Image 1 (cartoon, rainbow, N blue to C red):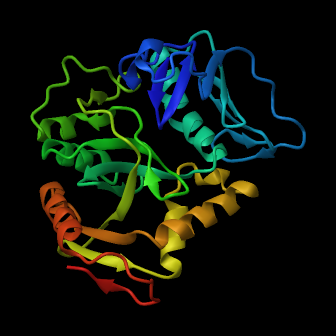
Image 2 (spheres, rainbow, N blue to C red):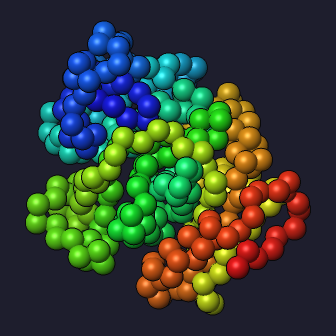
Length: 312
């Protein structure tokens, strides 16, 4: 048994990324049933009525599947079961990479959450979520926040529940070698994320965390100018949350309606801030300073207006 995203996970596959296994004696209810079951086995191909989506994804009313070349076929069903049909030559690291990313992201979407592509870190009794495209520096910034004493709730996949709370995920960061160098951490004892890539799993030593209310969302971007923070309002909030939804290809039909409803609820509770950072400059520390200053000194969210204005 493992725990993550507030779920008890019964997995037939070892999942060391999730930290230590949970034994039943550790649970408040010794005979608690798992919320999610992960098993190996054959996965039926998508039906003729399935929606075929980019990047090997396919969607049926109660199933989300993904076909990964060289790794296998995965399927999430009803928000409660995951089946892994791995190819014989697929390594355990490759299987876990897609299982704990794309497939669990799809499962959390099935469970009715707003699922964002980013990370979340704790500040006081709440948290901030950092969004950005691949390579934007989200995990590097999360490592800096962790170095400063702010617990990282989740990296890469951030599910947010109907009450606007980020759910704590796997206790690790995925960092490139240069990001490890920044925090003075060697990679000698770390597992590569996949193959010979210089990206590694960095386990995080953190306490058990409850779901935490989201106070701010920060979107990382680059431009030719000084570091600045700008509040996004109106339609920009919804387009940005859609753009940075995890596997937003899946946002069709009921999943799209749930995403829009959860986005509206979150926008009423939290500010969305764009962080424009100077191109070609290491601005990780300065970005962390600006974000923490904004969290400590900016007023609480007010009803959104249609204009955009800088917060610092």
